Length: 491
Image (cartoon, rainbow, N blue to C red; front, top):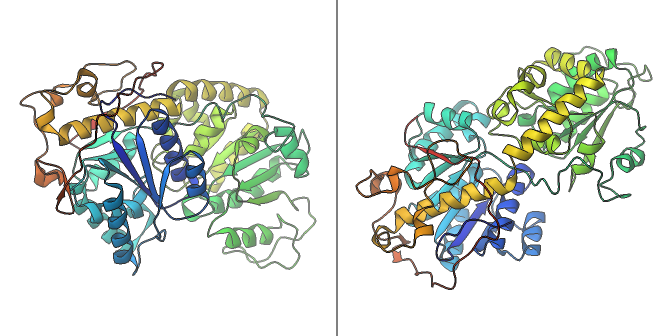
């Protein structure tokens, strides 16, 4: 994957916590693309599977011990990250998700150009006083982000309407269409659809629904289990696979057992049900929990239908990956869902969140209509390949970096080479390279240093930035058209 040139080779520091799920895939895909383009990429993250995968890509991984959620250790974690930043001396910091965004903006405080990407807003995940505190923090910390990058226009609007002010950019999620594709995997092996079914005792013609995601309240697997009994009433031989792990696994397993879906006699009834379902009534063992899955592509291709009943999202990756694999999807109508689907699919593929009855109707209806599933799969597959290829996402992010770095070096602008000046993101949806917008020209309005946390001369922790030496210019080997990079300073 090759990105447009951005003049000198900047050093980018990605900061991420969490280290699993969609956020980890985004960081991995961006790191791979940026390394291939010749950027110098460092990643600060806790040790584990993500760090190992990034090292395999030859990224500079800096271990950063940090918990997933803020707690009493936050000051220590911020101090650790500040030391990493001093060691790396990045030209730009890209912080992913709420926790990393919190720590990175506290550590940097605008002294290095910072891009913050929430990957869904933290104040949606937390209710009550915690949610109020999270929203207050996001409003305050926006001054320390040169750009806040949202993965959907709906996510941006939710932040703006909540009172978060700053420079916005919308770069929709993309997926690796070489890895997630509609053809058979490199089988026979764990990626082959029929082999996946066979190894888990699922017949080749058994109706199979797959839900890929972290087992947590956000992803709504509890709603899907509540709907599953109604699905089985119409499609008795259907199977449901919940692929993933997470904090709610024990609770979800207990719920499935109590519903009689795992054939565990004497399991307690879940909330809202007075007696356990009797085992052996035809619903036994219709639900499978796989645990953590390193590569879900085989499960996508094995599925007849992929479902994600989320309570909130920015723009979920699982439906995009499923459509790239040529499978129809049913998703809840939360932020980013409509933007991820071609318009023709919305009436069939969107259901209201936290509505088990509507979810059951949609899932059962599609399981019983193979021609409709095939039609939806074709449309979704074509849409993802044209609008959500990760190469387009990486290109849009590269242009965003160029605009941010260009704004942080006003003294260089008059002498900067043409490709560097042309990196400002367009304000509208685009499918072709366009000249830099008026906001990048002389006399244009740029955020004041107080608004954006940028000084006239970029500094970090009171010391001037080390100037990047002009080692070589990065030349793209092939043109990849950006599909979206819109910026705004208004709600």
